[in-house]
Length: 432
Picture 1 (cartoon, rainbow, N blue to C red):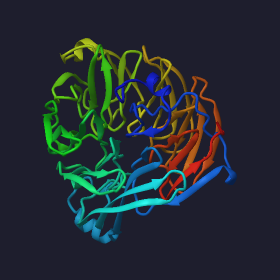
Picture 2 (picture 1 turned 45 degrees about the vertical axis):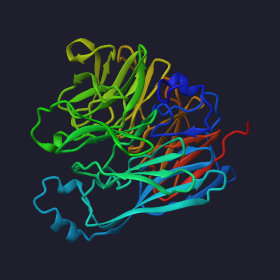
Picture 3 (picture 1 turned 180 degrees about the vertical axis):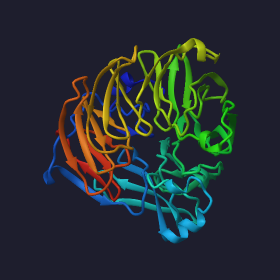
Protein backbone atom coordinates (compact mmCIF):
# COMPACT_ATOMS: atom_id res chain seq x y z
CA UNK A 1 0.00 0.00 0.00
CA UNK A 2 1.26 3.50 -0.84
CA UNK A 3 1.63 5.77 2.18
CA UNK A 4 -0.80 8.66 2.24
CA UNK A 5 -3.67 7.41 0.11
CA UNK A 6 -6.86 7.68 2.15
CA UNK A 7 -8.22 8.05 5.65
CA UNK A 8 -10.10 4.79 5.41
CA UNK A 9 -6.86 2.92 4.89
CA UNK A 10 -5.11 4.73 7.74
CA UNK A 11 -7.89 3.82 10.18
CA UNK A 12 -7.23 0.12 9.62
CA UNK A 13 -3.43 0.20 9.90
CA UNK A 14 -1.62 -0.58 13.17
CA UNK A 15 -0.21 2.47 14.92
CA UNK A 16 3.37 1.11 14.80
CA UNK A 17 4.66 4.15 12.92
CA UNK A 18 3.80 7.80 12.36
CA UNK A 19 6.00 8.78 9.45
CA UNK A 20 5.22 12.42 8.60
CA UNK A 21 3.21 15.48 9.58
CA UNK A 22 -0.33 14.29 10.36
CA UNK A 23 0.62 10.61 10.17
CA UNK A 24 1.14 7.99 7.50
CA UNK A 25 -1.73 9.19 5.31
CA UNK A 26 -1.24 12.89 6.06
CA UNK A 27 -4.79 13.14 7.38
CA UNK A 28 -4.35 13.26 11.17
CA UNK A 29 -6.16 9.94 11.55
CA UNK A 30 -4.89 7.09 13.74
CA UNK A 31 -6.15 3.55 14.26
CA UNK A 32 -9.96 3.53 14.39
CA UNK A 33 -10.08 0.77 17.02
CA UNK A 34 -7.53 2.42 19.32
CA UNK A 35 -8.44 3.25 22.91
CA UNK A 36 -6.54 6.44 23.72
CA UNK A 37 -7.04 8.23 27.07
CA UNK A 38 -9.92 10.69 27.46
CA UNK A 39 -8.96 11.76 30.98
CA UNK A 40 -5.79 11.24 32.96
CA UNK A 41 -3.86 11.88 36.16
CA UNK A 42 -0.37 11.11 37.41
CA UNK A 43 -1.02 7.37 37.24
CA UNK A 44 -1.73 7.68 33.52
CA UNK A 45 1.60 9.38 32.85
CA UNK A 46 4.06 6.91 31.31
CA UNK A 47 6.84 9.53 31.22
CA UNK A 48 7.61 13.16 30.46
CA UNK A 49 10.87 14.45 29.03
CA UNK A 50 12.10 18.02 28.85
CA UNK A 51 12.95 19.01 25.27
CA UNK A 52 15.59 21.75 24.98
CA UNK A 53 14.99 24.86 22.90
CA UNK A 54 11.83 25.76 21.01
CA UNK A 55 10.23 23.87 18.15
CA UNK A 56 6.70 23.29 16.90
CA UNK A 57 7.52 20.23 14.78
CA UNK A 58 5.41 17.19 15.64
CA UNK A 59 7.04 13.87 16.58
CA UNK A 60 7.39 11.15 13.95
CA UNK A 61 8.41 7.59 14.69
CA UNK A 62 9.22 4.13 13.45
CA UNK A 63 9.39 1.36 16.05
CA UNK A 64 10.24 2.90 19.44
CA UNK A 65 12.17 6.02 18.37
CA UNK A 66 10.49 9.40 18.00
CA UNK A 67 12.19 12.22 16.09
CA UNK A 68 11.50 15.96 16.20
CA UNK A 69 13.45 19.17 15.65
CA UNK A 70 14.19 22.10 17.91
CA UNK A 71 15.97 25.45 17.83
CA UNK A 72 18.12 26.87 20.61
CA UNK A 73 18.42 30.62 20.22
CA UNK A 74 19.88 33.61 22.03
CA UNK A 75 17.20 36.25 22.61
CA UNK A 76 17.56 39.69 21.10
CA UNK A 77 16.51 42.75 23.08
CA UNK A 78 13.42 44.68 22.06
CA UNK A 79 15.60 47.67 21.18
CA UNK A 80 17.79 45.53 18.92
CA UNK A 81 14.74 44.00 17.25
CA UNK A 82 13.22 47.41 16.56
CA UNK A 83 16.51 48.60 15.07
CA UNK A 84 16.87 45.52 12.87
CA UNK A 85 13.29 45.73 11.64
CA UNK A 86 13.20 49.50 11.13
CA UNK A 87 11.36 50.18 7.89
CA UNK A 88 9.87 46.68 7.67
CA UNK A 89 6.10 47.16 7.29
CA UNK A 90 5.59 43.68 8.79
CA UNK A 91 7.66 44.47 11.88
CA UNK A 92 4.65 44.29 14.21
CA UNK A 93 4.25 40.56 13.55
CA UNK A 94 7.94 39.62 13.69
CA UNK A 95 10.56 38.81 16.30
CA UNK A 96 14.25 37.95 16.05
CA UNK A 97 17.10 36.08 17.76
CA UNK A 98 20.82 36.90 17.97
CA UNK A 99 22.10 33.37 17.38
CA UNK A 100 20.50 30.10 16.36
CA UNK A 101 21.44 26.42 16.80
CA UNK A 102 19.35 23.84 14.96
CA UNK A 103 19.00 20.38 16.53
CA UNK A 104 17.43 17.02 15.75
CA UNK A 105 16.12 15.15 18.82
CA UNK A 106 15.45 11.41 19.08
CA UNK A 107 13.53 10.05 22.09
CA UNK A 108 13.03 6.44 23.18
CA UNK A 109 9.25 5.98 23.24
CA UNK A 110 9.43 3.22 25.85
CA UNK A 111 11.38 5.17 28.47
CA UNK A 112 11.30 8.81 27.38
CA UNK A 113 15.11 8.90 27.34
CA UNK A 114 16.76 11.21 24.82
CA UNK A 115 18.82 8.95 22.52
CA UNK A 116 20.20 11.66 20.22
CA UNK A 117 20.47 15.43 20.58
CA UNK A 118 22.25 16.35 17.35
CA UNK A 119 23.40 19.88 16.64
CA UNK A 120 23.04 20.25 12.89
CA UNK A 121 24.17 23.83 12.34
CA UNK A 122 24.59 27.28 13.89
CA UNK A 123 23.71 30.71 12.54
CA UNK A 124 24.47 34.25 13.61
CA UNK A 125 21.83 36.91 13.04
CA UNK A 126 19.04 34.61 11.78
CA UNK A 127 16.08 36.02 9.87
CA UNK A 128 12.96 37.27 11.63
CA UNK A 129 9.99 34.99 12.33
CA UNK A 130 6.41 35.43 13.49
CA UNK A 131 6.17 35.03 17.30
CA UNK A 132 3.64 32.21 16.71
CA UNK A 133 6.18 30.40 14.55
CA UNK A 134 9.52 28.82 15.50
CA UNK A 135 12.77 28.18 13.69
CA UNK A 136 11.93 24.46 13.90
CA UNK A 137 8.27 24.21 12.85
CA UNK A 138 8.38 21.79 9.87
CA UNK A 139 7.79 18.21 11.00
CA UNK A 140 10.39 15.59 9.94
CA UNK A 141 9.56 12.70 7.61
CA UNK A 142 10.91 9.19 8.17
CA UNK A 143 11.24 6.16 5.90
CA UNK A 144 13.61 3.23 5.29
CA UNK A 145 15.80 4.15 8.24
CA UNK A 146 16.25 7.76 7.09
CA UNK A 147 14.95 10.92 8.76
CA UNK A 148 14.46 14.14 6.75
CA UNK A 149 14.76 17.23 8.98
CA UNK A 150 13.76 20.41 7.16
CA UNK A 151 14.30 23.97 8.42
CA UNK A 152 13.25 25.97 5.38
CA UNK A 153 16.08 28.04 3.90
CA UNK A 154 18.40 27.09 6.79
CA UNK A 155 18.82 23.64 5.31
CA UNK A 156 17.44 20.13 4.85
CA UNK A 157 19.25 17.20 6.45
CA UNK A 158 18.91 13.45 5.99
CA UNK A 159 20.00 11.49 9.07
CA UNK A 160 20.48 7.80 9.72
CA UNK A 161 17.55 6.83 11.95
CA UNK A 162 19.65 4.60 14.25
CA UNK A 163 23.00 6.34 14.51
CA UNK A 164 21.86 9.92 13.89
CA UNK A 165 24.75 10.43 11.46
CA UNK A 166 24.31 12.85 8.58
CA UNK A 167 23.74 11.16 5.21
CA UNK A 168 23.28 14.32 3.18
CA UNK A 169 22.41 18.01 3.44
CA UNK A 170 20.82 20.35 0.90
CA UNK A 171 19.69 23.97 0.83
CA UNK A 172 16.61 25.29 -0.95
CA UNK A 173 16.60 29.01 -0.27
CA UNK A 174 13.57 31.28 -0.47
CA UNK A 175 12.41 34.25 1.61
CA UNK A 176 9.86 32.92 4.09
CA UNK A 177 9.22 36.39 5.60
CA UNK A 178 7.99 34.99 8.94
CA UNK A 179 9.89 31.70 9.17
CA UNK A 180 9.58 28.20 7.69
CA UNK A 181 6.41 26.09 7.86
CA UNK A 182 6.02 23.46 5.12
CA UNK A 183 6.91 19.89 6.12
CA UNK A 184 8.52 17.34 3.76
CA UNK A 185 6.77 14.16 2.64
CA UNK A 186 8.33 11.01 1.18
CA UNK A 187 6.80 9.07 -1.72
CA UNK A 188 8.71 5.93 -2.68
CA UNK A 189 12.32 7.21 -2.87
CA UNK A 190 11.41 10.87 -3.41
CA UNK A 191 11.33 13.51 -0.69
CA UNK A 192 9.04 16.38 -1.76
CA UNK A 193 9.85 19.83 -0.37
CA UNK A 194 7.65 22.90 -0.86
CA UNK A 195 9.37 26.29 -1.22
CA UNK A 196 6.66 28.95 -1.44
CA UNK A 197 8.52 32.14 -0.52
CA UNK A 198 7.85 35.81 -1.05
CA UNK A 199 10.46 35.86 -3.84
CA UNK A 200 10.24 32.42 -5.45
CA UNK A 201 7.67 29.62 -5.40
CA UNK A 202 8.59 26.09 -6.43
CA UNK A 203 8.49 22.47 -5.32
CA UNK A 204 11.41 20.08 -5.53
CA UNK A 205 11.84 16.32 -5.42
CA UNK A 206 15.11 14.87 -4.09
CA UNK A 207 16.38 11.30 -3.93
CA UNK A 208 15.89 9.97 -0.41
CA UNK A 209 19.17 8.02 -0.44
CA UNK A 210 21.51 10.59 -2.01
CA UNK A 211 19.85 14.02 -1.81
CA UNK A 212 20.25 14.41 -5.58
CA UNK A 213 17.63 16.67 -7.14
CA UNK A 214 15.27 14.60 -9.27
CA UNK A 215 13.01 17.42 -10.44
CA UNK A 216 12.03 21.01 -9.75
CA UNK A 217 8.70 22.58 -10.73
CA UNK A 218 7.78 26.24 -10.56
CA UNK A 219 4.40 27.07 -9.08
CA UNK A 220 1.68 28.68 -11.24
CA UNK A 221 2.08 32.44 -11.89
CA UNK A 222 0.59 34.69 -9.20
CA UNK A 223 -1.19 37.98 -9.89
CA UNK A 224 -0.04 39.73 -6.71
CA UNK A 225 3.16 41.75 -7.07
CA UNK A 226 3.67 42.11 -3.33
CA UNK A 227 5.73 39.16 -2.08
CA UNK A 228 3.79 38.98 1.18
CA UNK A 229 0.77 37.86 -0.86
CA UNK A 230 2.76 35.21 -2.74
CA UNK A 231 3.99 33.09 0.17
CA UNK A 232 2.49 29.90 1.64
CA UNK A 233 3.37 27.21 4.20
CA UNK A 234 1.46 24.08 3.20
CA UNK A 235 2.50 20.41 3.31
CA UNK A 236 1.65 18.11 0.36
CA UNK A 237 -1.19 15.59 0.60
CA UNK A 238 -0.57 12.39 -1.39
CA UNK A 239 -3.70 10.72 -2.80
CA UNK A 240 -4.60 8.31 -5.57
CA UNK A 241 -7.27 9.22 -8.12
CA UNK A 242 -8.33 6.67 -10.73
CA UNK A 243 -5.03 4.85 -10.39
CA UNK A 244 -2.84 7.96 -10.57
CA UNK A 245 -0.96 9.35 -7.58
CA UNK A 246 -1.25 13.06 -6.99
CA UNK A 247 0.63 15.42 -4.68
CA UNK A 248 -1.90 18.11 -3.75
CA UNK A 249 -0.31 21.39 -2.65
CA UNK A 250 -2.30 24.58 -1.96
CA UNK A 251 -0.40 27.86 -2.28
CA UNK A 252 -1.06 31.55 -2.77
CA UNK A 253 -3.86 32.06 -5.33
CA UNK A 254 -3.59 28.48 -6.64
CA UNK A 255 -4.00 24.92 -5.49
CA UNK A 256 -2.22 22.51 -7.80
CA UNK A 257 -1.73 18.77 -8.23
CA UNK A 258 1.55 17.19 -9.27
CA UNK A 259 2.85 13.77 -10.25
CA UNK A 260 5.15 12.94 -7.30
CA UNK A 261 7.43 10.85 -9.52
CA UNK A 262 8.16 13.60 -12.07
CA UNK A 263 6.95 16.88 -10.57
CA UNK A 264 4.76 17.45 -13.64
CA UNK A 265 1.64 19.47 -12.94
CA UNK A 266 -1.62 17.54 -13.38
CA UNK A 267 -4.21 20.24 -12.64
CA UNK A 268 -4.61 23.64 -11.02
CA UNK A 269 -7.43 25.74 -9.56
CA UNK A 270 -7.36 29.53 -9.07
CA UNK A 271 -8.87 30.00 -5.60
CA UNK A 272 -8.66 33.80 -5.50
CA UNK A 273 -6.46 36.12 -3.45
CA UNK A 274 -5.63 33.82 -0.54
CA UNK A 275 -2.04 33.60 0.71
CA UNK A 276 -0.02 32.24 3.66
CA UNK A 277 -1.99 29.02 3.16
CA UNK A 278 -1.01 26.64 5.98
CA UNK A 279 -3.64 23.89 6.62
CA UNK A 280 -3.10 20.63 4.75
CA UNK A 281 -5.97 19.69 2.43
CA UNK A 282 -8.04 16.56 2.98
CA UNK A 283 -9.50 14.05 0.54
CA UNK A 284 -13.05 12.97 1.39
CA UNK A 285 -16.06 11.79 -0.60
CA UNK A 286 -14.03 12.07 -3.80
CA UNK A 287 -13.22 15.76 -3.19
CA UNK A 288 -10.07 17.64 -2.25
CA UNK A 289 -11.06 20.19 0.40
CA UNK A 290 -8.69 22.98 1.45
CA UNK A 291 -8.44 26.44 3.03
CA UNK A 292 -7.62 29.51 0.94
CA UNK A 293 -5.62 31.07 3.82
CA UNK A 294 -5.50 34.77 4.69
CA UNK A 295 -7.24 37.20 4.66
CA UNK A 296 -10.76 35.82 4.13
CA UNK A 297 -10.28 32.07 4.55
CA UNK A 298 -12.75 29.86 2.70
CA UNK A 299 -13.23 26.13 2.44
CA UNK A 300 -13.05 25.09 -1.22
CA UNK A 301 -13.92 21.62 -2.54
CA UNK A 302 -12.41 20.43 -5.84
CA UNK A 303 -13.07 17.31 -7.89
CA UNK A 304 -9.49 16.13 -8.63
CA UNK A 305 -10.46 14.25 -11.80
CA UNK A 306 -9.14 16.56 -14.46
CA UNK A 307 -6.11 18.08 -16.14
CA UNK A 308 -4.95 21.61 -16.80
CA UNK A 309 -6.77 24.63 -15.39
CA UNK A 310 -10.00 23.20 -13.94
CA UNK A 311 -11.10 26.35 -12.07
CA UNK A 312 -14.36 26.77 -13.96
CA UNK A 313 -15.26 23.09 -14.19
CA UNK A 314 -14.22 21.24 -11.03
CA UNK A 315 -14.87 23.54 -8.07
CA UNK A 316 -17.84 21.87 -6.36
CA UNK A 317 -18.50 24.22 -3.43
CA UNK A 318 -17.10 27.08 -1.32
CA UNK A 319 -17.82 28.00 2.29
CA UNK A 320 -16.66 30.82 4.57
CA UNK A 321 -14.88 30.62 7.95
CA UNK A 322 -12.13 28.10 7.23
CA UNK A 323 -9.12 27.93 9.59
CA UNK A 324 -5.90 29.70 8.63
CA UNK A 325 -3.56 27.49 10.69
CA UNK A 326 -4.98 24.12 11.91
CA UNK A 327 -5.61 21.41 9.33
CA UNK A 328 -8.96 19.60 9.11
CA UNK A 329 -10.14 16.11 9.98
CA UNK A 330 -12.20 14.22 7.38
CA UNK A 331 -14.32 11.32 8.62
CA UNK A 332 -17.37 9.47 7.30
CA UNK A 333 -18.36 12.12 4.79
CA UNK A 334 -17.86 15.02 7.18
CA UNK A 335 -15.23 17.69 7.73
CA UNK A 336 -14.26 18.76 11.26
CA UNK A 337 -12.32 22.02 11.45
CA UNK A 338 -11.15 24.00 14.47
CA UNK A 339 -10.55 27.67 13.75
CA UNK A 340 -7.61 29.64 15.06
CA UNK A 341 -9.94 31.23 17.62
CA UNK A 342 -11.52 28.04 18.86
CA UNK A 343 -14.69 27.59 16.78
CA UNK A 344 -15.35 23.98 15.76
CA UNK A 345 -17.28 23.47 12.52
CA UNK A 346 -18.75 20.26 11.14
CA UNK A 347 -19.49 20.32 7.39
CA UNK A 348 -20.94 17.86 4.93
CA UNK A 349 -18.02 17.00 2.66
CA UNK A 350 -20.13 16.57 -0.50
CA UNK A 351 -22.10 19.79 -0.25
CA UNK A 352 -20.31 22.09 2.22
CA UNK A 353 -23.49 22.34 4.30
CA UNK A 354 -22.70 23.34 7.86
CA UNK A 355 -24.09 20.62 10.14
CA UNK A 356 -23.02 22.14 13.45
CA UNK A 357 -20.82 24.84 14.92
CA UNK A 358 -19.71 25.50 18.47
CA UNK A 359 -17.10 27.24 20.57
CA UNK A 360 -14.37 25.11 22.10
CA UNK A 361 -12.47 27.97 23.73
CA UNK A 362 -8.83 28.87 23.36
CA UNK A 363 -6.67 29.72 20.37
CA UNK A 364 -5.32 27.07 18.04
CA UNK A 365 -2.36 26.51 15.74
CA UNK A 366 -1.84 22.75 16.10
CA UNK A 367 -3.78 20.39 13.84
CA UNK A 368 -6.16 17.95 15.57
CA UNK A 369 -5.73 14.19 15.90
CA UNK A 370 -8.54 11.68 15.31
CA UNK A 371 -7.98 8.52 17.37
CA UNK A 372 -10.44 5.96 18.65
CA UNK A 373 -13.39 8.02 17.46
CA UNK A 374 -12.27 11.10 19.41
CA UNK A 375 -10.81 14.43 18.33
CA UNK A 376 -7.80 15.71 20.29
CA UNK A 377 -7.45 19.50 20.09
CA UNK A 378 -4.38 21.19 21.59
CA UNK A 379 -4.47 24.95 22.16
CA UNK A 380 -1.88 27.69 22.45
CA UNK A 381 -2.95 28.02 26.08
CA UNK A 382 -1.80 24.44 26.75
CA UNK A 383 -5.24 22.87 27.04
CA UNK A 384 -6.11 19.57 25.36
CA UNK A 385 -9.83 19.31 24.60
CA UNK A 386 -11.28 15.91 23.65
CA UNK A 387 -14.46 15.74 21.59
CA UNK A 388 -16.48 12.96 20.04
CA UNK A 389 -15.95 12.91 16.28
CA UNK A 390 -19.62 13.40 15.47
CA UNK A 391 -21.86 16.24 14.38
CA UNK A 392 -23.01 16.63 18.00
CA UNK A 393 -19.57 18.10 18.82
CA UNK A 394 -19.75 16.69 22.34
CA UNK A 395 -16.81 17.49 24.61
CA UNK A 396 -15.90 14.45 26.73
CA UNK A 397 -12.75 15.58 28.51
CA UNK A 398 -9.94 18.09 28.83
CA UNK A 399 -6.49 18.38 30.34
CA UNK A 400 -4.21 21.35 30.95
CA UNK A 401 -0.45 21.18 30.32
CA UNK A 402 2.25 23.49 31.60
CA UNK A 403 3.01 25.20 28.27
CA UNK A 404 1.47 25.79 24.83
CA UNK A 405 0.55 22.94 22.49
CA UNK A 406 1.70 24.08 19.06
CA UNK A 407 2.62 20.64 17.69
CA UNK A 408 0.02 18.06 16.68
CA UNK A 409 -0.38 15.08 19.05
CA UNK A 410 0.32 11.54 17.86
CA UNK A 411 -0.80 8.06 18.87
CA UNK A 412 1.59 5.26 19.90
CA UNK A 413 -0.45 2.06 20.32
CA UNK A 414 -3.24 3.25 22.61
CA UNK A 415 -1.09 5.96 24.19
CA UNK A 416 -1.18 9.67 23.43
CA UNK A 417 2.13 11.48 22.87
CA UNK A 418 1.96 15.26 23.20
CA UNK A 419 4.70 17.77 22.53
CA UNK A 420 4.25 20.98 24.51
CA UNK A 421 6.40 24.06 24.52
CA UNK A 422 8.67 22.47 27.13
CA UNK A 423 8.22 18.69 27.13
CA UNK A 424 7.35 15.50 25.30
CA UNK A 425 4.73 13.58 27.28
CA UNK A 426 3.33 10.06 26.91
CA UNK A 427 -0.08 9.35 28.47
CA UNK A 428 -1.32 5.80 28.81
CA UNK A 429 -4.44 4.65 27.04
CA UNK A 430 -6.40 1.47 27.71
CA UNK A 431 -4.39 -1.74 28.07
CA UNK A 432 -4.92 -4.00 25.04
